[in-house]
Image (spheres, rainbow, N blue to C red):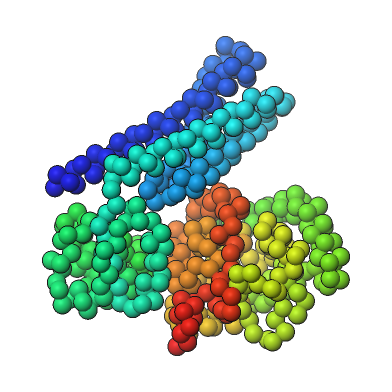
Length: 461
């Protein structure tokens, strides 16, 4: 109990220190604003100055929450620096643009560029400092992993990359745990659970709560569906209503209007880049700049997705549908560039305008690859409850080579939380991953899909 209290006190101290850093960033904005812009507004508008600073603080807070900028211990200092600095940049751009629009004139941006450089330097110093403080105050947790099969261990292999947070000393199967009993978990501070039967998992959930142990449970499709199910209050027993997701009509109307607006705006803004991209592809190998590929959207409807061609013309000459692999020799030099900056996806703005896709939603999969996934786990088809999207939960919080089981969970999480604010948060989240290489890296060479069982040389059932 004493150890738990010390840990809670240390966690509270870290949160207070993070709050101090956030307030310092806002204070820096206030100083620059008051010295460089406020004098031109006049003392009579002092409330306006407070409003602008408050607006900056609110936007910065929302973006930091969206990007998990202060998730000390889980994120590396580099990730925290990137997330915090992107939040500062977007907040400054938004406030500068809104105030310039309100005054109908531009004011000197140089002080704010200097402010941004100072904030980035502060973020660098702070992220390294608070990470060192965190791991001094909170040592790595003695951790056990409970799993069912070897594939389960593969899915959580990233935990091994964070030994300062979790010190894994034991890995045991569900059968081994049943033989030893739950009392064998008493020496541990954290628990990772994956792939075990619901009965044992429920007992472990209660055990974590009872003994103040941190439990991390990888959900299956059923868990995610239940997590978003509404409680039926008409009966004396607690019932959760699970059914096919049906979004509210007003949300669908707003979503479609936003899709039309966003796709038109995107086509206007990016049209010069699209023209240059098409020209570069044509000049390289004289092949077509655009290629069409059959994909699946809502209710399994097929449509032709549009993309700038980043591979050789005969990339799938053998007729086998496969995902892109690391160092894929089918990708052309021009293709490497446009894939790195995501320009290969720009023609999908036409798919969105037409109505085949939405800006936010599960990424559309090829019928052949979807069929392979559904053979391995039939629940994969549940992601087709909504229209396919340009970006989504799996793209923001996962990677290109994230296991399809986990991509499915993320897509179902989005379907459960569908709403205007969810879409807005995911759009901001997409801005964060645009320049992160890991989010576009392919699967390992020679693999057709990102399946875990296939990845390790085992045939999918």
